[in-house]
Image (cartoon, rainbow, N blue to C red):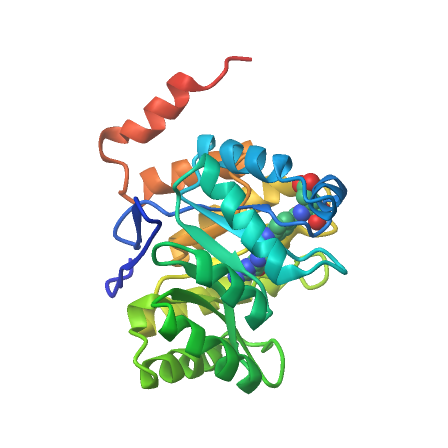
Length: 288
Ligand code: THG
């Protein structure tokens, strides 16, 4: 059990959410992301925000506490699209947002209209990323997810991912960004390509959480890419990662196996007193 647990608070204009290993995990809903979603891509190309609004509502109802928003439509004006998506989501929910883009112009477009303390997704240990993204984190008083990679790419060992995390945290602190506002993503690759990949990410998660106390975010669904019955693998990985220190999974809360694994892990990790959340989930669950 980890002892050094920093707290990260993000907010909208009217709501604050605290991420911490001292409480239940905070689910970042990943669905507002056009990658691989033809229906969402074509709606966004036409400026139609209906899918964005319905995805937002569905994820809130399924238990997301933060919503990831990604405007990565090939050929689109991403900064303009990011603003449209953020405004559409704000019409239907006041959950805090995780603004997801590798592009500083897109991030800034979103941040400039966002009210509250956003979560920026993401910076990484490459010089180009550190120098373009961290000033935005500072200027907008945001929190940020740091991907555990550097100018040599994604490290192949847990120790080197720890080193990449150290570089990101050190650079953030040198700019006056407090350590508790930096989350680290130890990076999840598919076990379909390398059967040691998940184990290595779990080890990196533990090392980084222990050494720095920072919150850990990850896009856990990548773990099963290319394999059959992905939700079962994702659910098992989710429970293991939470035990190793994951506090902020970026996932689809509408996936029932993953969602149930998260609720069960919260209970088993001692963050669901009298099993109140587990029992109330069970009571409201549609019967087969
Ligand atoms: N780390 C961080 N941020 C991330 C990721 C990460 N953001 C993006 C991604 N990874 C997490 N988000 C998604 C969003 C969608 C899917 C996976 C991860 C996905 N989409 C389906 C597909 O491509 O087949 C299609 C969607 C559907 O219809 O279900 O799987 O690792 N920091």
